[in-house]
Length: 252
Image (cartoon, rainbow, N blue to C red; front, side, top):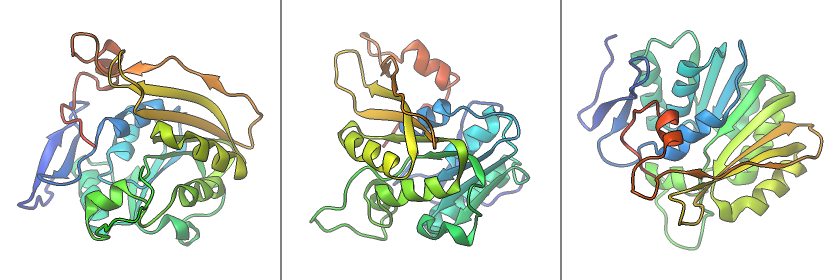
């Protein structure tokens, strides 16, 4: 597949069925949070899935590669990031199943009808917009801070796009848990599963995974913690399994 790679870009091997992804040599690159979010999703055959805030397209690519989803969409507000993700889709020959849209999730009605997806997955900006100066044109800053969309924007859009009984999956920071649960319930997405991710058994959680159901009944199950490294500083068996023993670049 003939795909243009720019001088400031590189192609990384996902070490799964020959899949590859285009990323910047410097600047924002996908991290472990995106990989474990893609793994946390339950996708049935012929499902329609959307990744909100698609970034480099990593979640959409992994879901397309590892599941039998019929259609996987990704929506990304940053034009340069969306265009790069579109080229990654082409690089993997997935144009028939994966579509990356350059657009604002707050205006999702321009692109999608209500209740048009079985699954919504998102790895949104973690940090609230504070009082400091943040460059709104910096891709890494936009990916990490609530500059162009807020947590509520993401959950509100997800609620509109999900079918009744549809699945919502988010990866975020533990310190935002109360906000996340409050907003999910406000938009009738009932939290169902919660899992904390720890760097190692002796360190506090720095990532959370939460799964909800549109119009679901009240029942939250706490899952066993996920540890990234073991006591010897090596990836745990579960992380190796998630990564299919691949993808050495782990950043965020």
